Image (tube, rainbow, N blue to C red; front, side, top):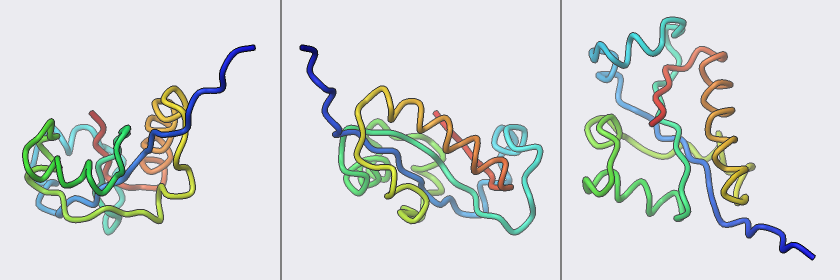
Length: 110
């Protein structure tokens, strides 16, 4: 009987400072951004999201936008999904990014 995958991975969302909009790559990735909506980074991790955010801010396996512009985690956007098996987290990371973009957010994903 196959073992059920362990639910120990998480998706997470980091709010980014408005100054990220000055970056051309970020702007080009978000042509449908709606003025006034948050800018966010969506990721997935096998760590607790708080620890992963601290690592980003310390420059450890950091996404450049989170390192430079990351303000805080936005748990209301992701907590209800966590934890989950690795494959589910990989898919949820993409789905969550798509959903936030459709809602007008400025989104970056690695």
